[in-house]
Image 1 (cartoon, rainbow, N blue to C red):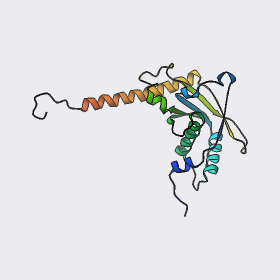
Image 2 (tube, helix red, strand yellow; image 1 turned 180 degrees about the horizontal axis):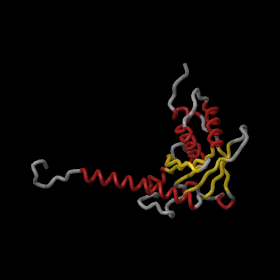
Image 3 (spheres, rainbow, N blue to C red; image 1 turned 30 degrees about the vertical axis):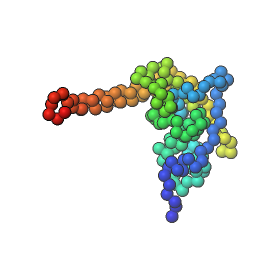
Image 4 (tube, helix red, strand yellow; image 1 turned 180 degrees about the vertical axis):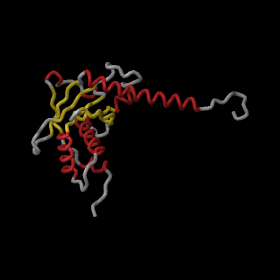
Length: 186
């Protein structure tokens, strides 16, 4: 019988290395300022990443969609920020044959960079594409600042999340019964 492991144990065992490429004008750009990373994935790229992850992690079972999204997030987090836990999944959207997966830099989220008004000035969104490579070569990725349409989609999603949190807080506050001074229960 095969040994059962949680996906997090398997994922941390061995992450594939990524070689980062960008245009020359962005070579010295400070990647620690990225608030969001949007990954372009074709069906072929997804299949290749699953195969790489399965071979590197020596799995006895097939990865499902949540596992490969987690692996992609961890690979990009290690590549750009040096640790596995700095990117958090935000949303996935399919357009034609491509899937766009957005991740949030939780360090920027905690510092309040993506505060109550997710305007384009507050968000530093980049797009990442997995390039075709031979199976023996290191997987290559190419990043660039996000196009206006991608930036707008991320802004909408971040705004929706901020609004959901605001509504929850308002509901919680309205459910709290205020006690008056001098009342018997106070």
